[in-house]
Length: 103
Image: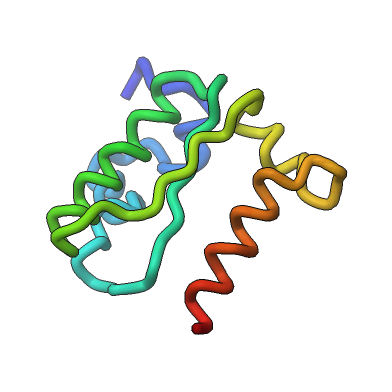
């Protein structure tokens, strides 16, 4: 696709036939792994939209919505960079989610 951003092309490749196979949403029906979805306040629309599309697919599969966390004051990268810092909003939510899986 000529209008595909270079970073997206690096992830998905440029062969349109491989896009579906490389997209996580294509594999929702194949697993029942619990999923915590996140989107950040400053995520650009092309990054945030697939999160909600995934939530819709998981809701259809499970009959209830997945856990979705909105990361206030973060963007696509800063939430990951916050791991191991005094900002525990993201890491704390991940730990809480994992704890619910082991009970």
